[in-house]
Amino acid sequence: MRKLKNNLRYIKIYIGIGMAITTLLGILLYILINGLQHITFDFLFNVNAPRGQTLVPMIFTTVLIVLLTLAISAPIGIGSAIYLNEYAKTGAWFVKTIRMAIETLSGIPSIIYGLFGFLFYVIILRWTWSIMAGVFTVAIMVLPIIIRSSEEALKSVPNAYREGSYALGAGKFYTIWKTVLPSAVPGILASIILTIGRIVGETAALVLTAGTVAGMPSNLFDSSATLAVFMYTITVEGTDMDRAYATAVVLMALILFLNTFANFIGKKLKPQ
Amino acid sequence: MNKFQLKDVNLWYNDFHALKDINMDIKAKEITAFIGPSGCGKSTLIKSLNRMNDLIDGCKITGDFLLDGENIYGNLDINALRKRVGMVFQKPNPFPMSVFDNVAYAPRVHGIKSKFKLNEIVEKSLRDAAIWDELKDRLKKSAISLSGGQQQRLCIARALAAEPDVLLMDEPTSALDPISTAKIEELVIKLKKKYTIVIVTHNMQQAVRISDTTGFFLLGELIEYNNTEQLFSMPTDKRCEDYITGRFG
Ligand SMILES: Nc1ncnc2c1ncn2[C@@H]1O[C@H](COP(=O)(O)OP(=O)(O)OP(=O)(O)O)[C@@H](O)[C@H]1O
Ligand SMILES: [Mg+2]
Image (tube, rainbow over all chains, first blue to last red; front, side, top):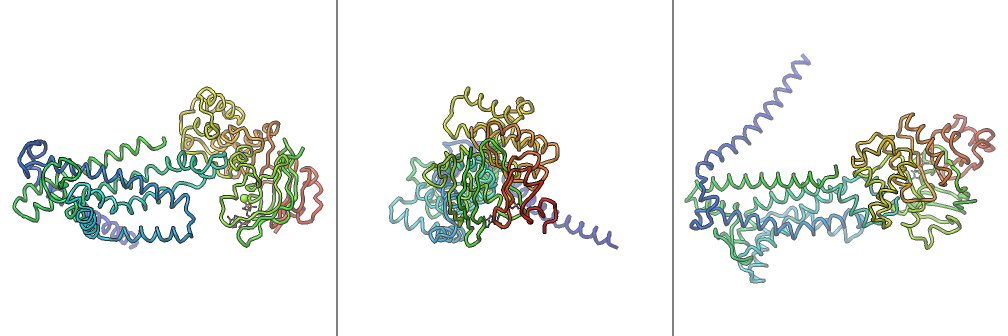
């Protein structure tokens, strides 16, 4: 009787896992089947193909926005996490305020960031729809993610390392730089990967700030669509679903590539 | 020769009075053992000797801690103090780096950059910690992969590399097997020639085997402080006698 119950439980678990995997694989396969056939050489690589016939500008813009955003928000985010976890006194009102701000910011839907970016950068600062406006908007949006997960990474560094370092006469900065941070690198990197995924997949905040132009930007104050934004616009227009699926395939491949790359760096940096 | 002189030392964790009117002299180049039941303040006292208590919020200390006649809570730079007064923890805590980088940590902190000099210090410290032969071919390996006993001796080597005068050890063998423990005891006795050693232990035999002077603590007070042989053969305080004969509590 007990055995039967146990077996039943296992069967239920397997059915659950099976359903989850089938759904995921199903979506993946569906996109691949619909998308792969429309991926052509021109679509992927021909810079000179007419607008909308090639993904090169969107791939370029996506990578550019990811890199610029990280260049702004990674140092600020990791720095804030170090401050909050290593320097700040937990009870101080200043820290409590920052914490509350972070919590709140991380709960806001991205369309609101988009609206803010549109009003502030595009209108007030007159940056127009531009890569810059997009980058600065998304940089604020991902800041809470970076801060929170970097903080988790720092928290998971055993206190014994800090004590060991202080006991040898090392100062606070040296201890953090040489002992705490290296141990936290894998965790911080995981947060960066998460952030990359978020930026690559972002549409709402970017449609309103970086715009939807499907061409190569000539400078940072040009409007240009990322892959996700491009996909969003052609899907909404509904004229060219084939290319929307093909873009989805490229988008997935790009995310896979970026994650693998970040993992690789993580392994390199991790203490043996 | 007194290395440390403690005068009317009191310590509070917020409202909790953890050390009460401690007066004691710790002799240079001797091994001083702190014994006493759990929670009596041994770790608290040993940590105040290299100011590790400064890291704890709400810790308040009064009284004098003289190291070679100089108050360590006065003008002395805290990092300079910790260089002079090394510490080995209860749980071995090597950094997640190579064996070499672990031992070279303190010299690097204190400004030594020359590869040649670092090699020299690392070898000497590992030899002094009696672990050179075991580790000389594994200097590039991660310290985390060593056994617990090796890790603890590596931590001793790491502390020695700072060229301290004093070595504080808070139950350094309580997480180790008997063989590693024996090795560390042997090592500590050897180190006494060059260093002043203060050790906290729950193991009475260990105190007898290695220490010259023993202090018995109870509820934050230093109850009895005497030559180890004397303290264990004829304790003057009833509570101390009960504790060392195992009749305590
Ligand atoms: N950070 C702290 N905050 C508040 N109270 C503390 C703190 N550290 C220790 N105490 C208290 O101070 C007293 C002495 O603690 P201590 O760690 O010095 O004891 P100990 O003699 O080392 O005990 P053990 O043999 O278990 O290691 C205990 O009652 C303990 O609860
Ligand atoms: Mg203790």
